[in-house]
Length: 354
Image: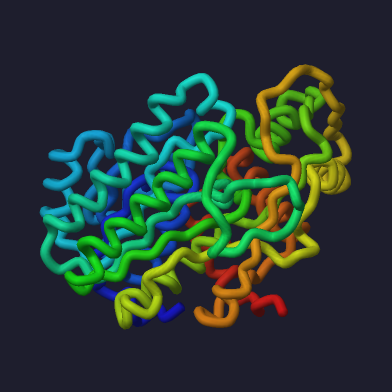
C-alpha cells in the first residue's frame, strides 16, 4: 500500500455504513482520500458507523439502496470518483434462506446497477467488487480454493455471490476493459474485528453472550473457516485498487485474500480461544436441525502474495485479542473513532507474516 497514492483521490464506497465498509472508510480517510459513501442505514444498533463517527471524515454519505439504479448512478456521477469499492450486500448465509429474493436482488442486481453506474461516470479508473469466499462450488474435498476454481454455491447467499462474480467477468470483458477501467473482484475469508454486531456471527454472538453473562450456544463447532481480522482483506482491497489504477489490464481479475494456513480453524477453536482470554465466558453445543452450510472452507491466497506482494499481518489469536480490546474500549465509553484509527495504524506498522 502507498499512503501518498490516496492523498486527494476521490473514492466511491458502497456499504460504508456496514462493518467492513466502516473500517475501510476510516482507513481511506486516514490516508487522505476524499470518500463518498452510498449505503442503507446502519444494519444494527449499535453499529460501527455511529460509534466510530465514520461520517465525520467523509465528503458525502448517501443513504440509499443499490437496488435503485437511478439514485446510485446520480450519486456516483456527483462524486466523480477515481476509484470505486463495492461492498454493499446482503451478507448473511442463514438470512438468505428466509429471504432469497432479497439476497439475489441486492447481491446480483445491485452489482449490475453498480457497474452500470460506473459505465455512466467519466473518470473512473479502478473498481474493486467485493464478493465472498463462499462463491466457489464447495465439493467438500477440504482443499483450498484458488481463483480458477468453479463458481457455485449451495445456499442463496453463496450462489448470489457466484452470480455476482459472473456479472463482474461479463462487464469486464464486454464494457470496462475496452474503456480503460480496471475491474477486479475480491474474495475474503471470515472477518472479525471490533464494531461487528451482526446476528448469527460467531464473535458478535460470543460478545453478546459474555456481556449478558449467558452461555454462548454454538450450532456447528466443527465447521472450519478462514478467519482473519477485518484489516487483512481491507489491506488487500486497497493494494489491489492501487494496482488497478496504475495498470488495470494486468490486475483486472479475481483475487483471494485469506489467512495463513494455521489460522484456518474450526468454530470450537475460536470459542475456546475466546474463553481462554475471557475466563468468565462459557459456551456449549446446541444439537438442533440447521440449514446446510459447508463444513470446511479455505482459500489459497498465493496469487495475491506473489503478484500483489500482499501478506496478512496479524495471526488469529492476535486478531481475537484486538477484537476484545476494541469491545472493552467501547464498553468503557472510549473515543472509538480514535481507537479504531489507532488499531489501523498498529496494523499498518506490524510486520507482514511469512
